[in-house]
Length: 158
Image 1 (cartoon, rainbow, N blue to C red):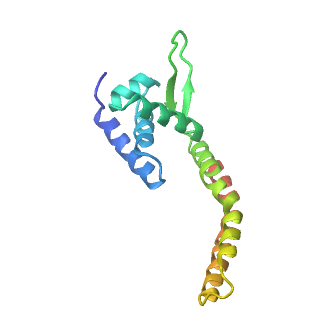
Image 2: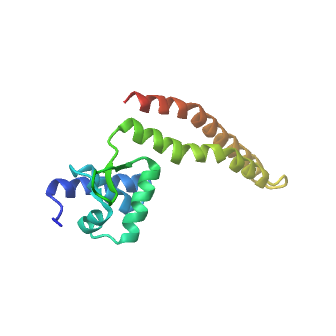
Image 3: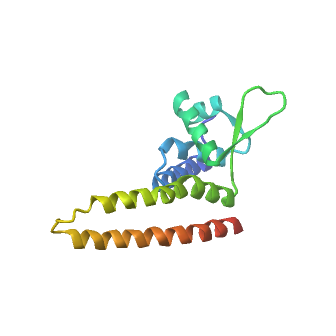
């Protein structure tokens, strides 16, 4: 299996940095970067060999990236092994990231806000401060709930 080209090396490095920024494992960035910078779809074995990655890391990374909509399965006639390619549509990537990684946190936000509210003790000397912060966090949550549909719509325009 050939080593990574300089272009592939830089693409992998960039995707590893992006994965780190959005709190995804390094292996996700490595796999996505390799698939993004490779012309032909790659099999699990080819990904493992090119990235010198264990089967478990490669398999889990591909599964998770497929769940996120960042990697797609590609059918190659006459070939039994699954092959994978990077999803390159920014609209699809952004929409699925927002749907799968951001929306669930906002949806669970009310539960967490209730827990914060319930944790404020009536006789606490910091009660006023805590209520003020709760109000601030509630306003952030309300703002994000209103903005997320707009961000999704904007992502769809690209």
